[in-house]
Amino acid sequence: RESTSTFDTRVGETLSIMPPRTRTSSRTPSKASSSAKSPAKTRSRQAAKPKASARVKTAPVTPTAPAAAMHYEFGGPIGAAAITLVLPLVCYFLVYACNEDGCAAVGDVARRGLASLPGFPKSMPLFDAQGAVMALGWMAFTIIAHVALPGIEKQGVVLPDGSRLTYKLNGFRVFVATCVVGAIGTHAGVIDLTLVHEKFLSMLTAMIVFSYALSTYLYASSFGRGKMLAKGGDSGNAAYDYFIGRELNPRLLNGKFDLKVFCELTPGLIGWLLLDLGFAAKEYATFGAVSPAMALVCAFQGAYVIDALWNEPAILTTMDVTTDGFGFMLAFGDLVWVPFTYSLQCRYILEHPQALSNAHLALVLLVQCVGYAIFRGANSQKNLFRTNPNDPRVAHLKTLQTKRGTKLIVSGWWGICRHINYLGDWIMAWAWCLPCGFSHVVPYFYVIYFGILLAHRDARDGEACEEKYGADWVRYCAIVKYRL
Ligand code: NDP
Image (cartoon, rainbow, N blue to C red; front, top):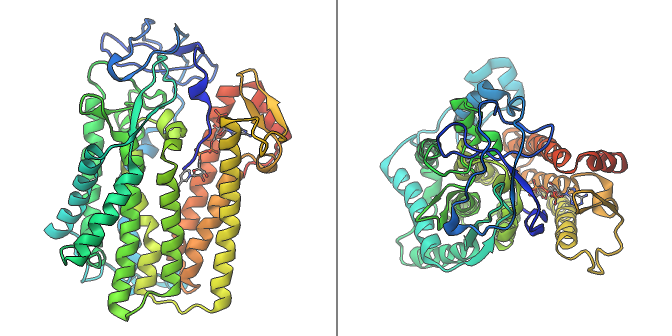
């Protein structure tokens, strides 16, 4: 993921903070905007003190007026509770509906309903100790590697209380360590990556339980003293806050281990690639070769993961890190949803071998190249512009000066539509699904779901920008009319 916010560079800006709800030391940030979203009528108005150890104070803090009503997302408490319960079932359903015993066909499902689905394969237990050890062992390995390996130190954006956190970033190094340990372990016969297929469901079960446990810990610990709460995650409704995440930056080890940023990039993303490679290894062990379809999906998704790890500092300015709390939404998304649903295409190709024509493979490559050119071109253009607007590669771009101090690009990639980078990402999603052929719709789950996610994310970012930029955002939208 990439982001180009310059929020972090505007040192000295006056920020506002919504102080403790009652006498507890919980803090809820809020902006002095008509659309601020906290149910803060009962809150007192004293500025909260930053937790000094890991933060650098950079801006004065000004109390602001309480907001009138909570702005709920995801269908409010009922929607959040439903998503919390349903998402794990969707992960199971994708195996129930499509596996080595068969795959749901739209016509059959319409005629015979659930009876037409293959059900869980006997070769994949829903739970077994070895699968649990593999999944939790992977979590333990990434935690140890993250703590033990050196990393680069980067400062995050200015927080609502004017402080900034320092982050240790070493996701790419953990990835390299994983490759080294994986290669040595495989050579020595200690690691057998092909096992991930047989243990897929039991690893899934273990990680679902782990993510519920982690979310419960995160929710409970957010009530501790001196916690900075996410603006959207402190509604007072337990189901909603559990899902969205109450605490903005939960940390362990005396403030040195940032749980959210660690989970965002390291265990889930690298785990996703390991699942892909496990399916490729199983294909090789079963058929004596890795098919071009499998090779393409592994290569595309591998490049995406490595790109994200290489550009790790960019995570610090994403909405996930700057705005959202750390709760079930991100914990489950990072640790379960991404690895176990994004690897579906590789699992499908293993279970339903695809003999693709050269024309089909060429089309897939073309789609990937087009998607990547847009994704990388747009993200790099914005990153470059936000980092150094005088760079000759972006200095010619037309811009809109905002009262907030920053400029919005209105030509080049960003003049075409407001989230051209999402469009590129979505086109790449097609390239990751097209190698699965056209016999079944289930392997196209990713492209369908991702389209919905990006449309929703575009709406959330639009709201956030409207709040940040006010009338300037309205002017911007009049110039750049299209969203995606
Ligand atoms: P963006 O990188 O699009 O960042 C949005 C921010 O960019 C805005 O809040 C605004 O912040 C700034 N901005 C918006 N328009 C302009 C403009 N015209 N000129 C200058 N700055 C502008 O969003 P994300 O962080 O959501 O996504 C980053 C990448 O990650 C995308 O390519 C996306 O596809 C990918 N992604 C992938 C996911 C996955 O699961 N695979 C999930 C989510 C995202 P400001 O003005 O404050 O700088």
